[in-house]
Length: 212
Image (tube, rainbow, N blue to C red; front, top):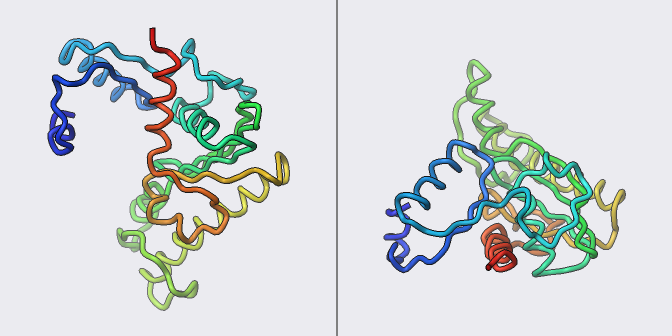
């Protein structure tokens, strides 16, 4: 954390508060320890009891904090019926109504997970990076893998968004975010708005809602 702040030109002593959303308990515990004992910062952890401005219609205890944070940001920034696509460690799809009701969504393996699974669970497939494919019929193993990942995840996103609009709202705008989305979003004709810092915006908004 210190190194990241230094790279951004931010001095640790200038920090006033922290807000945390994390679905990996060991990481969350380490950060809470840092904020409490290392930096002595007041901090907020997104979870049960925290004001979000959303009415969660799904099973609240099973909805990841990251999905709630994205939904808060998208609702506040864009309004209306929304579908949020987050190309992160997992690829998640969330439906939020214009009344700020979180309905639920879909979860698929993230691109990184899929790449590692191909490498680790097969005998001969190599480890590859994600690349734009010009053709879907690869002439080599690597070309075929690139095509499968690239066109496969675009198709996955398009089909889930289509089905969610069918079940929820044909007028819903699609908001994209996530690290893999930075690479993929310009090829995704189903995404209306891409915001690479949607989760950070959501954390800021939730912090402001819960300020003393």
